[in-house]
Image (cartoon, rainbow, N blue to C red; front, top):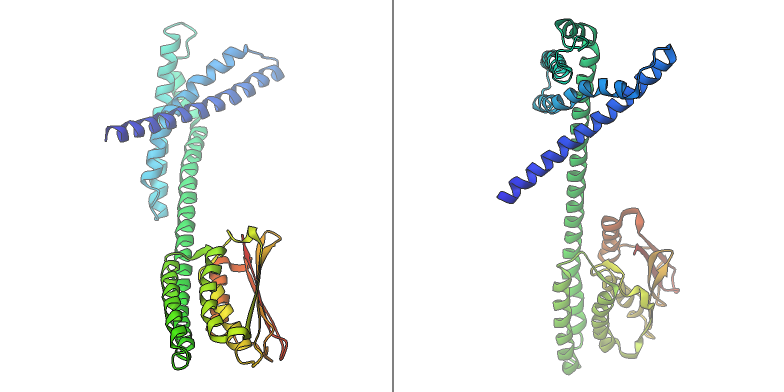
Length: 358
């Protein structure tokens, strides 16, 4: 509690010091103009005199600035233009009167009762009548700065909120797509194992244990939208162990994985559905089987991931659960920074190439 109060006081002092510094710079600029104008008109005055005359004027404005800021903030949400104009016109005239009184009083404190001292009723009337437009303009500038800064912060906050909502929506949609993938994957894997139960129950039992490993890994992945490529390859290898046991020598696997690609984060459960499509639809239907190739490497600052087979291929591309969800998830997570390309032809296999940012 005490630390919080001390911190707020420190911030207030910093803001006040900043206000004084700004007005000091304004006083310096104005004094330079006055000094140069004296030289130009042939009525030069010492530099210290020019600067000293400007200090009281702008020091009072430094003193009144927090008051003007408070008024601007108090009525910042007012939407009625007539009320807003009336408030600031009244407040502006009051600030002008207060500034003139304080300025003349400050001059009297500095110069005393010397005959040449600028303290007099005439000076007060002169400031009220001769510089009221300048002071009202200064008041308006301060109010404009406060309202402009407030509008900027409001716009920035809205953009941050909108970005967060967009991120949450993308995460929710991605989670829904992953939820769709998991039962699809489980159903297909159980079908693969059930085909072995009558003829090879020992192998089927071993594959059920593998399936348990897959489910455990799947649950672990559910906690994150992305995971390292190395983890995705481990998950896919566990799935491929089941397919190798089922297809035997009909399934040949080639892996070309660059070491630097293993740590790149990719969408969780992205690779396995692509491998499953290649095995089930490209290689398994052929009596001779085929070769599955998995490649990963870096290209142009992005990860290039390829899943290809030399199976039966297809005359047309149909994006089911695996391919369709992969494309949608890439779009949700990376937008235009990712791509998914498909190459296929009857008898020439199926090739999926994915590019994701590092």
